[in-house]
Amino acid sequence: MILRALNKIKEDIKVIYENDPAANNIAEVLFCYPGLQALISHRIAHKLAYWGIPFIPRYISYLTRIITGIEIHPKARIGNRVFIDHGDGIVIGETAIIGDDVLIYQQVTLGGTGKEHGKRHPTIGNNVVLGAGAKVLGNITIGDNVRIGAGSVVIEDVPPNCTVVGNPGRIVKQQFINHEGILMHNRIPDPIKCELNRLKYEVQDLKNKLDQ
Image 1 (cartoon, helix red, strand yellow):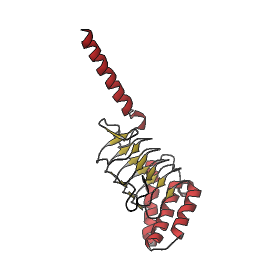
Image 2 (tube, helix red, strand yellow):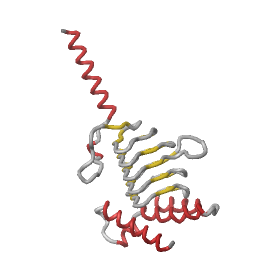
Image 3 (spheres, one colour):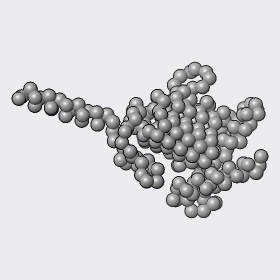
Image 4 (cartoon, helix red, strand yellow):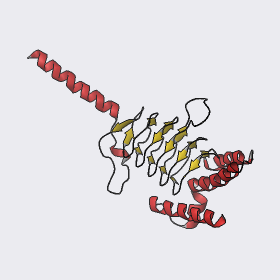
């Protein structure tokens, strides 16, 4: 068990080096990356919760939130090679499920929409990017290879291989991913603005036809 835990930590450190050019050395990564600290803490709390131990898992989660600014419920299920970048303000609910190779930026919420019991938080597929400030709410499924733009609010299922932007989140057809598979947040359009522009041109076209 200890060997497996150490292998996971090594894997997490490798992911940080692959995704963050600011990572300079092991000591810096271990002591100055709250995302890594939150994931290690969560694995301990999750295992204790799985064993049915009361109070202590939640208290570990509470202390982790104070130290890192990241709140992960002990019963949330998180896959391998997940990278939490910056991390401040992240909230991951009790029944949330996160797949492998997921990139999560600061201020992301994987939350519920009410007081219902049972599965009430999102399921995130593999190789998903959750942009800064994205809110994914309710018992919905985000497919593999999905990119969710910064500030988006997603309340419905998203099929695999899509890019979602806006509030509420809308699937955009254009590709905003570079050759390395990284979402280019600065090139994502505002879908509401695009729709208003389309309507403006439509109205102008109708006016021209009436004038004729």
